[in-house]
Image (cartoon, rainbow, N blue to C red):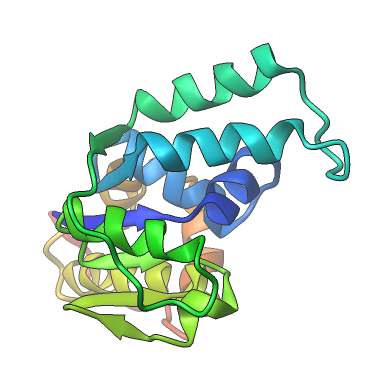
Length: 181
């Protein structure tokens, strides 16, 4: 199973809007991806959600409910090393948390993290690139007739339309493939 850390911006996008960030949350909920985070990142999430300059403007209680929900599908880790690799000093915590959780991927939209590309074996990628990497293995199982398309949609918690649209978006055909029995 892939271990990944989703940055705060990914969690917020997945919580409030549809699209690939929401898919990542769904996959973590279904235990298809092991999502790791730390208390400091949950605190950051709550802080952003209540900031008056952001469109969310949630109450402290509402933000705490969202952080509590994240804990239902996350593995909580405690960073053990101080990291000083990022241009934005606040992003060092994200890297430290990913290291503590033995993450293979750090999924973010933050250009200050993305510029690193890789850090101590952790691939730092955009949401779209991570989804494509994750789905490629599942798609190959389907292409080789190891699993039916219906079964694949069940495993991923997606609708048939949603999965076929996403695969086609990546340039992967979903018709004229062998059927799995």
